[in-house]
Amino acid sequence: MSNQILLEMKNITKRFPGVVALDSVNLVVNRGEVLTVVGENGAGKSTLIKIMSGAYQQDEGSIFFNGNNVGKMTPRKAIDLGIATIYQELSNVKGMSLAENIYLGVQHKKNGFIDYKKLYAESMDIQQKVGLEYLRPDTLLSNLSTAEQQLVEIGRAYSRNLNIIIMDEPTSALNNIETEKLFTLIRKIKAEGKAVIFISHKLDEVFNIGDRVQVLRNGESVYTSLIADAKREEIINSMCGRELTDMYPVSKRDIGDVIFEIKDLNTNYLKNISINVREKEIVGLYGLMGSGCSDIVECAFGSRAYKTGEFFIDGSKIEIQSPTDACGVGIAYTPADRKEQALLLTHPVKNNLTLVTLGQFIKWLFINLRKESEAAMEWVSRYNIKIKNLNEPAITVSGGNQQKIVLARWLASNPKIFLLNDPTKGIDVGAKVEIYKSIEELCNLGCGVVYVAAELPELLGIADRVYVIHEGAMAGEYTGDEITQKNIVASAIGEKNNENKN
Picture 1 (spheres, rainbow, N blue to C red):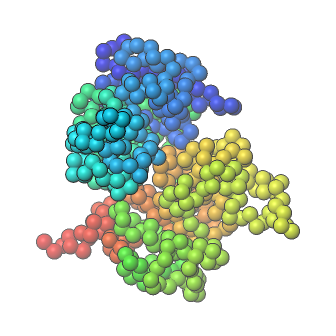
Picture 2: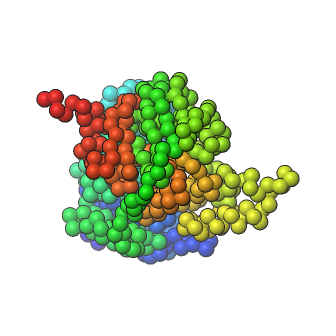
C-alpha cells in the first residue's frame, strides 16, 4: 500500500432489507487531495460516508487507515483517527457558544468546571484556521449564518486532530462568495497534507475543487478519473447509465395568452414588482441570494404577507391572502426547502402523494384507502419515483425522489399556475432531467410555470422568458435570443443599466 494512501476501502458491501445499498465498492483517499464523489440520489453516496464515519458498519469488505486494517468503523474510532463528517443537516448546538461548539464534548475543565479562559483562547486559534477570527468565541451559535455554522463544524474537526474531512453537499445553502471562501479553506486543508472527500451534484464544483472524481451508480463504483483527465459527458453518462444527449429536454411550444399576472407587488423589501405568465409558458425568475425571487412566489401563493399588490387570472382580479386562496384558484407551489416546508417526513409516501387531492378519496368522512393507494401508485409509476413501498416514510427516500413526490401531488391537482421555487436543489442530474420533462408535460396541458432558479444554466436551457430581480426590484426582462448569461448576470448584479455609462 502506497505511503500516500490515507484511507482505503476494499470491496465494501452493505445490505438493507430488500436492497443492496453498496456492492463491492472500492475507494482510495490520498494525503493532500480532494476526492469528489458524485452520483444520482440513491446511488449509495450517503451509505458510503456513513460507513466511513462509523454510523453504519459494512456487511462485507475491509477498511484500512494508514495501512492498518481498522475493521468496522465506529463513531468513536472515526473521531480517534481524525475522520470528520459534515452532513447537509449541521449538527451544531444553537444554544451554545461558538467555542463550546468547536470543542463539543471535549471542553477544557478545571476543578470540575469548564475552563472558559483556556477554551476561548484555544477556540481563537481554531477560528483563525477556519476564517472565523472576526467573531468572539462566546458568540451564540444561533447568531451565526449557515456558512459560519458550517465553518464551526470544520473547526470542530480541527480540534480533534483532523486527518480526513467528509463534506456532504456543503455548498447547497451557500451563496457564491461563501462558496469561494469554503473552497479557499478546502485548498488550505489539502495543502496541510490532509484529505477531503467532497460530495456534490454540481459538476462545476467538481472540476473547480477536485483532484480526482469517483462516480457511484446503483451501489457500485462505475467511474474513477483524475480531474485533469475527466470529461463532463463521461461523468454524466456514468452517473445516469445512459446518454444525456439533451440536458434540458424542453421543446418550443405555441404559447398562448396571459393567464396569470402580478401587478405592483410591494413588501418591506420588494418594490413594485409586476410580472405575467402566458399559457404553456415557462417564466424564469433569477437573482442573487436575497434578491427577492423567493419572496415573489411566496406572496403569489399566500404564504408571505405583502403590503400592496394585485393578482389576476385570465384577466379577472383574485384575492390571495393565504395558501387556501391560492389553491382555490388553481395555483400550486413547491417551496425551496422540501424537508421543512413540503413533506411530512415521518408519514408514508402514500400520504405525501395524496395530500393535495385527499378530498377525492373521502366519502361520508371515510377515506377509500384502496382508491388512495391506486392513485398514489399511478403517480409513482408515471414519474418513476423510486421507493420500496407506499408505506415507506418519506424521510427514507432520496432527495430527488422526495422532490418528485412533491411535484407529483400537485400535478395530480391539474394546476393552472405552477410556482416552482428552486425545484432541482440538491438533486442529481438524472432526476433533474425527469423534472424538466414533467414541467414540459405540464405546459403542454396548458399550465403556466414560474420557475425560480438558483443555477443560471437551468433558465438558459428551459425558460421562454426571464425576469431578473436585484435587491427587491425589477432589473430586467429577457426573451428569445436575449436570454444570455451576460445579460442576466449583468442585471442580477445591478450593472445592466450602467454598462454603457463609462
